[in-house]
Image 1 (cartoon, rainbow, N blue to C red):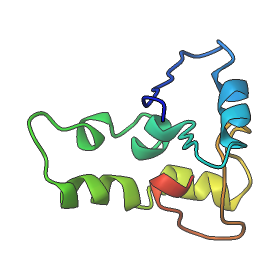
Image 2: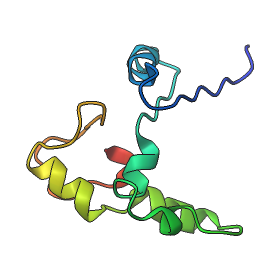
Image 3: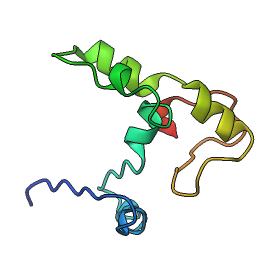
Image 4: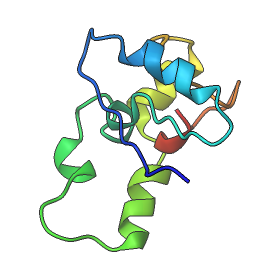
Length: 98
């Protein structure tokens, strides 16, 4: 068994390509663009990343909330191509599912 690996990248570095390749492996979890999704395209950073310790239910609310901008962009097919979409035709998509 290998140790867990955490891969991060910055904009314009090929991280979407790496994420797409890693996602094909059955035991790999790839959360491409998760921070953009849970911050509703970077407009809700303080709400998504509050100071101090949060409990699991608060963290789950951050991940499972359908945010207005990303849901609207999804509805009209305007999400950037590097936002992975799992549900087609949904009106409100939780951030974790974007």
